[in-house]
Image (cartoon, helix red, strand yellow):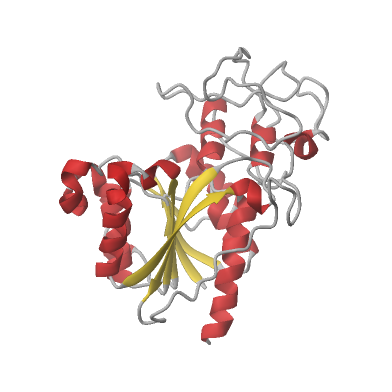
Length: 310
């Protein structure tokens, strides 16, 4: 299928869809480093610009639109005006692209917290907006560890299907491949994913195998808890302390934090994928990404549907 990608970042979602056999025809992100990384590893079809400044008519039509929109503009006091809230310009653009181009499907990724905003009223408002645009939707809370990703990362995946494609949802959400209880297979622990890497100060040829010198101090706060080598990694972060900085997850050896390369491996980027930018920028690009392996599962289901709809 032909896919338009919004808020693409470094391209974790896009890479998985490409690996599944699809064609990304247009992509966009505002971050210069992320766009440079995307261009180097995936392709030059990405546009570096503030999405609010892009002419909607310049976005090509496609079979699928994908992306994750921020949700700062959603509040319980403003549930009836979500589209018009100034803070929702990014959501508004995603919505307008869907409504204007009318793709067969869309995939939107967001943080788990979107489900609890307004006591659940915000996600209901969003699904009503998409229904008005011509779509039926399914809202799915996903733990990436259940899909063979060595990380307990919970995200919300919204699948939209145009009503012209079918009155019932044809998209079958990917079946879990792993489970905490060992079924169908055990979760993949962080040590199994990273133990082949040498210490970053030892001679090696791995791309981006450098890391933050931010001291490892354990306290009960995100990014500062001990990492258990027998369990999947905690969520790879885009932001740490709420002040805009990045806090890399502690390595399971307890002596340092994960390198850029190790963080990317937890997000299932291939080792040949090179991140461009200063250290904090690279960490942020990785933390913002959809794990490549999970994106590939979504792409495989789209491929099945493409053949079914022919």
